[in-house]
Length: 251
Image 1 (spheres, rainbow, N blue to C red):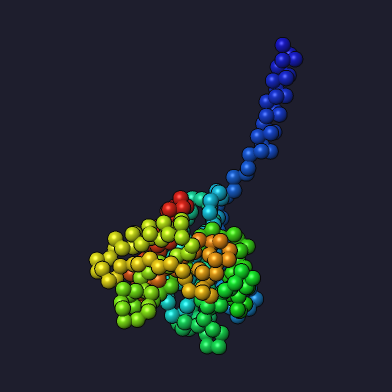
Image 2 (image 1 turned 90 degrees about the horizontal axis):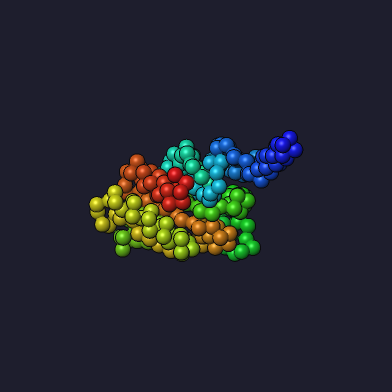
């Protein structure tokens, strides 16, 4: 009887030790900050929100163009979001120097959204684009949203502005999510010419195009229209991001 009891105790201890060794630890949720282009005049913070649970890695970028304030104001809100799974990376002011001056880009430095790789071996045209691109690769980003603004509605035939569009790449899941983003935004809009449209293939040299084409990220550019008031535009951006996170079961 004593021998049987001893064997049961040994078996129970062995099982407990095995469970401890094979069960992955539960990680606590956390928010950290990392500096993009650290130690340079381009230095800007990236916020890393970890849920502590498995899930996709999503990056939200604002402020690539400094004269498009709705994007970086919305991204500043997004960095405070709580998520229930995966990891959320937020760069509110990607081109901080241009954002502070309210200009598309700093004279002599070129358009940041044309500075990302245009080939599989490319690394980017300048220090800032190289470090942002490297960050996407380092964190193995699954989904990326770059927040922008157009000067007119895309439905206008008088110019080539892409305001009120969601530009996606590649197709498949990216198209499905883009369609859901469009639906949630268009529910808020009564005027047909102000409604969001879907476009495929972000411009070459853009963050969305290069990360999707060469790193396998599912990427979007969400373009609001600067003819709407600022609070409306910020709300559109925030709702598009929230829709993505909801679709990915992160919220």
